[in-house]
Image (cartoon, rainbow, N blue to C red; front, side, top):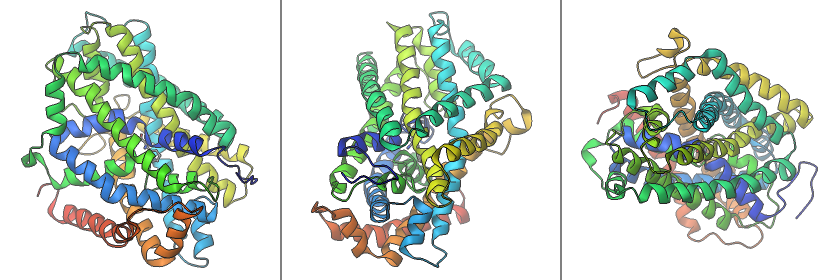
Length: 454
Ligand code: PHE
């Protein structure tokens, strides 16, 4: 491995763990189940899977190609490839998306920590029902000071890892956290699949009913595919920039995509059988894994252990993702503005904290933020704008950049460096140049003109 002052992953496995850690997060176990639930299950899941393979995976390769070719984070990377143009703005949009996503993500991550605490003190016991579970949730989320403190705690944890740099901080954290995550995941899937409602859960996830699909649902499926793989905002450009010249991108990218997608499906296999076991609905929205799941643990055999494991699982998954979100913004200040890492980390963390406050107060603490727009509060708004629209537009712009400006040839050379051939490179080129930009454009324009329904 080459040693550069910017830092490098210490091995390919370390990179795969860190990139999978970025990809696997609240997106898989919080956002995926509730969005699938809101959109009727099977058909939406199928569309999400199609977007992962047709758009997500090609964009993942494109981002890693930019990162490795330049050894720079998004803004300086694009500056280096096409100096003197407007294209670096695409990287700038990514940095802004990073701020936006981290600001609401750290709030949900904070709630998971709160729920670990509540599980440990036995709040989710046999006496709990839907109403008391909702009351516990609102009790926590309408407490402004507590919400702000939990979000700050999570941001500080993230900062402590990111300040240690690439191999000594991010990779090291992933090496400890990811195995724990996998262990908990397996235990939880086994518990859920032995409840007797596994078949119903599987049917909800995999039996498609296309009548429940809307344009809004299609946009959210695309957004979810990108969000879940950490794409469209430069996180994978940044992580790719710490790869050395001979690492095998095709294999690593394939492993990350397969890991991430399987874990979203496994997240569904934990949540849906458990819901159906209690006769609960899947349409609760963002509160699904908090209110509905928490109301069920009390009646599950070994429920108190299961609840601690479940919320710890969410918190761990969230941490390896907030690390990557913070790293994108920090590396902008380090690479482009030449700041020392330490200063960048604390400055960005402080700014993210300020931006997180409105989201933290939008789940009941402050009326104006709680009823922010027609579909929910400020956090839901930030989730939709940054987590779906910034990423879809970002991914489209990156594909146009790679396919039409920088060029397929140099991008492919970067992907295949070290002699690792990309199978079906022609298909990849076609997807990046035509399918991804057009699909995003058509969906967004159609949705804007005709509204959320077909
Ligand atoms: N992929 C992460 C998740 O699924 C979220 C994320 C999005 C992280 C974009 C980094 C960049 O939870």
